Image (cartoon, rainbow, N blue to C red; front, side):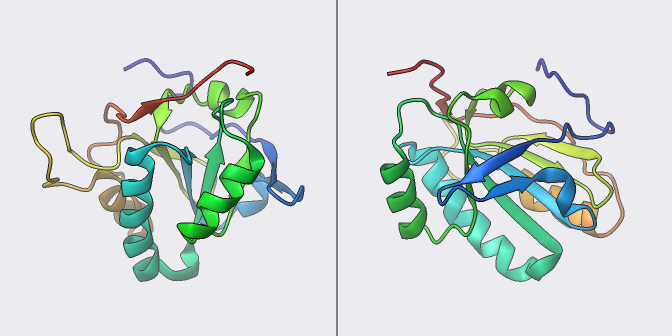
Length: 172
């Protein structure tokens, strides 16, 4: 799998605004485990990931921050806001020109990245091991990766192929 940023390197910093226009900067979250979730209001894979992440986040408490990043050019702010509220997402950042998605080489929604408390990229890829033929997961890569980082270990695997809906990179 091609990636612009290798694991075990500093995660590229960025600043994106949320739906209310408030800026959020990745480097301001030093000291927390950060999950970047390249996200879509329209993608059923993102909806399933949101349900699974909600379960894991409840167990992790405030040690972990989830940033959903809306990079699809086809989605409106109103649509993003409505779906984020329905899915109980606390922070959705807007990436309308998909610069941050490009910076991380995110291709799908969801495409997930785990950054440790000092800002090092530790995992990138899929939520779990679901495939076209295997509809029920037997391993949750993301939750396992976060648990490993919280325990001070390197996730294994630390990279998997992301799957989901393609990030739309055009201006409607």
